[in-house]
Image (cartoon, rainbow, N blue to C red):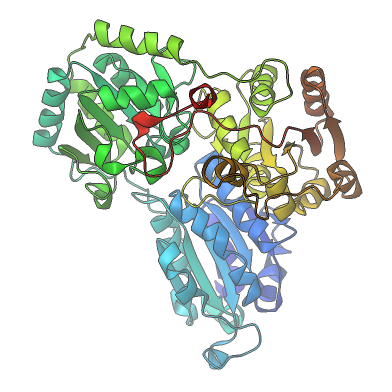
Length: 556
């Protein structure tokens, strides 16, 4: 079957099960877009900006577990994908970014809208390709999807010269190679040593990261926790791998983790780390992190072992498979005294907020109540993100969609669109600060155009809240360029783009507005007016040990 490069690309995407592409057309991808016109079975979402396309592909991947796909033209189109690609890279999210480039004879000649996007993205992709020869096109596309999903997932970029998309070649369809879980380094000796460490521990603690979500190991993890009889904490990326309603759950760990989690990790004698990479936001002062404990780390990526924190033992392999094999070996443990101590700590240090005012935590808790904890929650980055992590109880994996490693403001709106497209049956909500909303608010127009129903809740405190919090605590209240009190009316902005909109100024309005907004089944923006000096508690100061976490009452 003689096909053009563009036809081969589309056929290979169909081979890989791609049903949605998020993109923005331009000169060097016109051949590809002309072919997409003939294939309505692949839905194309035209975003308002290429960055929105990359974030939407990322959100789609996080919510579905499949590979997200975005498409852009050369030059500025390609460079506008960079922040989204870096976001996916930091959080190990499988996306394939496809870019066009100038024809091969014009490469390297500073041609119009030419840029070396492969060189630019080399440090922020799992792998990238530039295709200059049509004979390499099909195998490159297939390889890109395989790399994106194999082992520790990540973004892959394919840059295709325009003349390749026009050239012709015989195309032979192939079925995708099944992606196998990484098991080669899971040895009996490693499992036996881990089992021995667990059996000898008196105060074990389990720390769950994003790897457990990616591996979809929630069932094996629940069995493992029951067998070890240990409290469970998680990272921002690990939310939902273990049920946040479970009595063993102690809340998030780290800079804005609960006092219970931070103090218990510091006291435990065995810390079992499952699919987490010891981010600085988790460990605080790494030299004083879990210094009373032996550390057992389970991870698919050997590069994460002893990178930030030295461990006593590790098992390299897919989380789901490692836990399955460990569960076969473990005898059920009992740590009644330790569990009772941790439970008492949870009662001593509950997560609280001002009971009479309209606050971020109250909105999040009410949202959890209204959605019965079944929504997909996307977030931007800042105070609202931490409140969403602290006060919404995530029951299942793939239900918190947030930028953890890169901390990308402007991420959540595009990601929420992608999540809703991938999971149309789910209620999807993006929690945003007003500073973040300003960055990519244009994607509200995308949601309206395609009738993608979701909630955009703006925590509008008229400041860059998290930066202001640091300025208050560590910079003697010098609020340098963090005040946003310039009169922008987000309700009018949303309505101008065709969305429904509400404004909340009182606590009593929250539940009714949330229920109305969900019932509309349309793109809805809710502007919530909050105090500019609300803070995220607890907190660990930069450079301090996590056991030095403090709350508002401690400052008094």
